[in-house]
Every structure is written in structure tokens, then in C-alpha cells.
Length: 222
Ligand SMILES: *Cc1c(COP(=O)(O)O)cnc(C)c1O
Image (cartoon, rainbow, N blue to C red; front, side):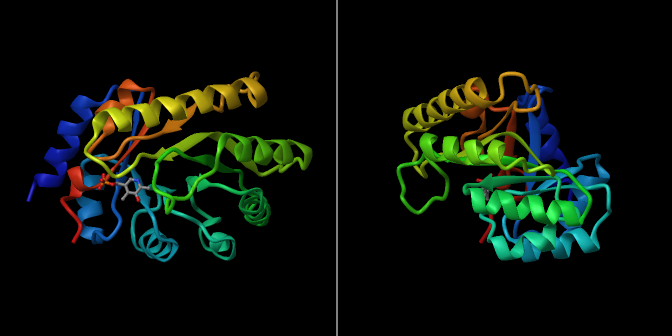
């Protein structure tokens, strides 16, 4: 069963070296993750805290685990000891809880601000003004143990590729505004996490630095 390894190597041929590949392993068993791991892939994404913690405990410790799903504040403590990047921060409250838990673990935790770019109302994320408010509070409150390294977005679930492209363009604009207003001097604010199995190529054309790909690597989820 070399599918996973082949899928990753095919994907890597289509992704510039500067773009990070987060292999989204949600719902998939450890053996699938190990197959990718043993072939040299180290960055994996999960969207549920409970699954993320379980897989962290069971799998090699040099895996970089990305939390790509919505995070409830009361669950931050479970992932704070090890999480490598939290993609979906969309409130100041969440950010300050992450900071508190990071302090307890004597770590700096990297975070992205999730921006709402899709037309569906069900998807999480904030508007430009909400992101500005989070960042204003972030700098007023000197959260010492978090580092904001960019933005994340999810496009509308549609086959209309022009719509998806426009949503990605919109996110890039928001990123640039936030970068200019809050992070002019900080090179670390540089990530744009967009692009999944169905739209990663468009995402890369529109400035993605980090794609989150699941089904193209591990097969569809049922
Ligand atoms: C599931 C998921 C992905 C990957 O989706 P695929 O279409 O399987 O590539 C990416 N990002 C988030 C936030 C997800 O929940």
C-alpha cells in the first residue's frame, strides 16, 4: 500500500518548496500517518482536540501537530504542551487562554488568525475589523507567550473556482492590511494558510504559504 507515499510525493511536485504542506490526517488511523511519517513527512493537521491528543500520545514525538479546527477555550490546556501551530484563532478570549496555557507550559505557541472568507455562515472566523480588534487588544495586553504568524481561511464549499479564487484574493488583501497595520517590523507574520485538496493550486497562485491537504493524501473520509 504505497498510495499515501505516492500521493505525498506527487503533491510535493506540485507545491513550491516555499509552501508548507500540512497533511490533514483527521479520522485516519495511526498506521496511515506512520506511512507518511516514515517516508519523511513530519507536519500533520487534526481538527478535533481529542483526536489530536490521542495521536500525539501514540505517535513519534518529533511530529509537528497543527490544530486546524475550531478550538474551545476550555480545551486549550490539552494541546498547549505540544501543539506546533493553532490555525483557527478567532477571538481575543481564545488568544488569551492560549497565552495562559503557553505560560504554564513554558512555551511560545504559534497562532494564525482565522478570517471568514466563505459565504456560508456556519464557518468560523472573523472579519477584518474583528481581527483588528483582536490585534489591538493583543498588543495592549502584551501576551508574552503567543506568536501570531499569519492568517488562515477556508473557502466556500463550491465548484465555482472563480468564487474560490476571489475569496483567496480577499484573504490576501486582509493579510496585507493587517501586516501593514500591526506587523510592519515583524518578519514572523508571514503565513497565509489557504488551500485544501480541491483548491490548493488556486490557493498557491493567490499567495498561500501553507496548504492543508487531507483527502488527496489519505483518500476520502466517509
Ligand atoms: C478537513 C480539513 C482540510 C482538508 O480537507 P481536504 O479537502 O480533505 O483536503 C483542510 N482544512 C481544514 C480546516 C479541514 O477541516
